[in-house]
Length: 247
Image 1 (cartoon, rainbow, N blue to C red):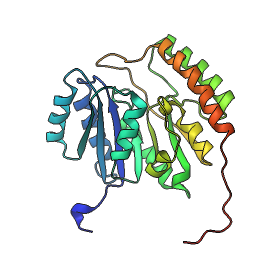
Image 2 (image 1 turned 45 degrees about the vertical axis):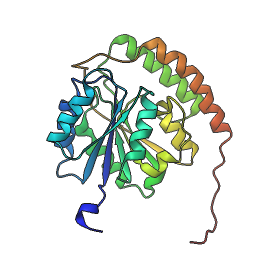
Image 3 (image 1 turned 90 degrees about the vertical axis):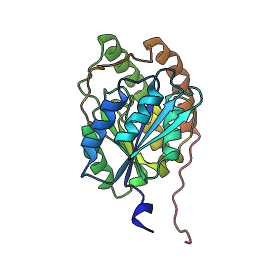
Image 4 (image 1 turned 60 degrees about the vertical axis):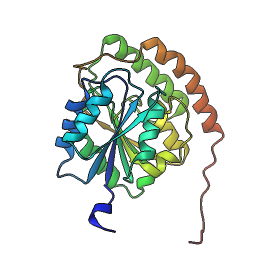
């Protein structure tokens, strides 16, 4: 394998829909956070944006050659965009973060270190925990209630499953059941396959540019249906204990 064929250690996957104002600042922040830390690539998935996100991504690519772009013809939702990015990723380890700038890329090295120090990298998901959320009171209260209900029903041992900043192995993610909105249930899906979840406190910032693409009631409606769907998956999961296996 030549130096040019060498795969990066980490792929940072960022799904975006109409985030033209946030692309360049976030790409620069990811670069600042990871330069000198590891060999990395940035995979942006443009989920059918109707603004100038596509052209701004091309501009960002000229500035940052580590940036790769995958474009959906039409919007398929955040979970599908994340899965597209993970499938396109070259690295064995994945970091995800939202494209709105509220997640802080400076937290990635800390989460990555926790994963890399694990004895079973494929069996651990490191989840960001927004202990001091910079959202409206309505969002914070609704999220607290949703996290409480979800945790009680799914037993996912995660105080903040909605944080977009997570680090895990590519192989583990692609082994999980796929469905729309699955990104909200990654901790439960990791536990379902016999893995573990560690939550690490991370920085959370106000949205400075653009507008939120989700409403409180939109999340509630799909969340209730998905919650019981994941519970159904959990009850039917079987994780075998392997005593012996030939290579």
